[in-house]
Length: 204
Image (tube, rainbow, N blue to C red; front, side, top):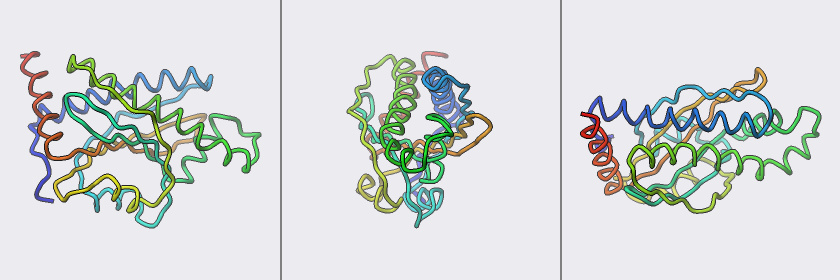
């Protein structure tokens, strides 16, 4: 993909650290919410295009996603994504092993929306604090769809890119892999890089 952003090594490291801070806060909040330890791995950050993102998620699979539009120093559509089977596992671990499959399915949307709200806001908050700029977020929305249809709604031009963050979530010895995605248009991408440079210049 020729239009992958060219971030410096320092910019990439900073971006990873910002998400690491956010993921740490999210793990603490989730642990308190469900009264059990929730471990979230150090996030792996990279930029991908739509096809590569679909390959990660599984082109023909069903994906559960919680999305929030964010506005600030850069605009983006933020998404927390789980393969449908993994999302059911997360909900079951959080709400109780004793619950029936039917009840878990009924509570899936509400539970995952709350999880997405916590994780996305923790990461967006960490970015906002580090940039010392206000970022506003719209109300979260729940989606259940294939990766192609889900991403096609947001990736509107060939120059749009996905900032993909991979995290492993561990609850009560059960581990699932989830993804955060921040979909950026070319202008938002430039603004993100500029904000990273401003943070680095302040550190220097």
